Image 1 (cartoon, rainbow, N blue to C red):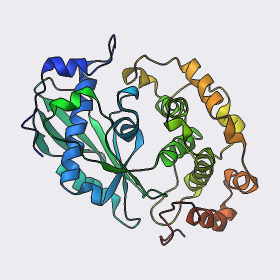
Image 2 (tube, one colour; image 1 turned 180 degrees about the vertical axis):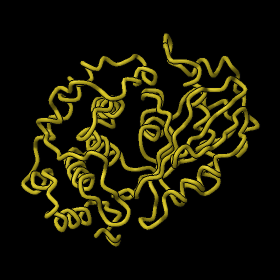
Image 3 (cartoon, rainbow, N blue to C red; image 1 turned 90 degrees about the vertical axis):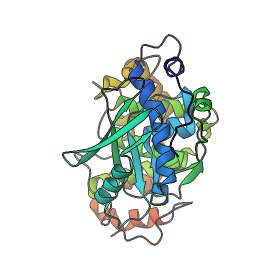
Image 4 (cartoon, one colour; image 1 turned 60 degrees about the horizontal axis):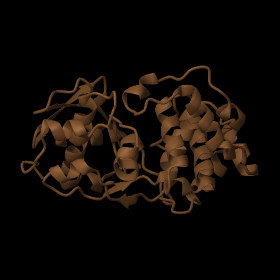
Length: 314
């Protein structure tokens, strides 16, 4: 997959932005370049050892042009015992490539990989963060890209990709909001809860996964899941309460129209009030007590569509 047969022009790239948008051409260039790069990584076998996850996965495989833009490329390793830093390095090496009108260069910035894009249409100042996390807890889904008009100009067909299931993507965002206030996560959660057919996601699964992931954020799990920085327990009332400030107001650079953070908070509380419906076991795990490790591991192994039945979790 070289992309040499593309029919992209500056005009088509500009029309990739929403009408009346204040988003810059940099965002349109990055979004299209991601499609080229993801197709290339698939052709190189990267998705045999990693699945897609995170905000960019939501946009590409669930939301399409209706979702916010995302600049990050987040993956989940397939094997729990893989050296994820080495795997990220291998993916970064595969990302050193020229594809049609795009040129990609990877660089290691203090142990974190970033991919810089240059193109025939301009050179975005923002780079793409490339990260490889631990395996998904549920068997990944395989999904096609959501169709957008610009794809007809690529000159190649985009592949279906293995991706973390929607419930687990949302649960990771719920868990992250237990320890930080990131507007991009709140925006993605509200989008999923208000957009058909995705709004029919299994709430009980999201809640249980979120509670278990918060516990793991506090204590770690096996060799693959490290304790998060500044972890906190999951208190649904606190999670749903108004937040004093949001930690990443750059959401305005990635979403159109730019969301009101006050309105975003209100919608988040309305859409996720059911986080309060913890059963007895979930309420215990939400308190994030180390003594519950055995119960937590058993619950993770018992998940429907669970992928970690044979994994070393102690």
